[in-house]
Length: 102
Image: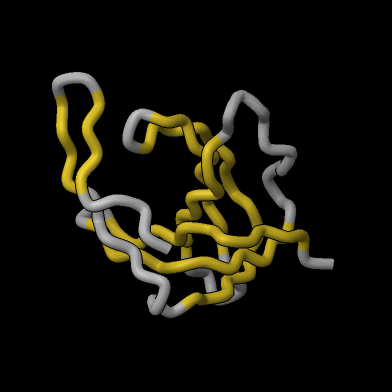
């Protein structure tokens, strides 16, 4: 998985992290505590906040919203597979797969 090294939008240019196919995928299970839409490099993404069983808060980028609302409510238990990125603002789990924990 390689997203981008540099992204240009209009007259602005952003340096992006490089994501490689050999980055380790993690699985996180937690309860949704917040569902938001945020701009990520000029594109609206679904951003979830999960609370794990050991009380860790995990921020999840569930991907572009493309105008469709994410049908997940606070209190829903999810399992998320993806790549954990370390950013200045904290850790971000970029989701490859999101499913309900039954």
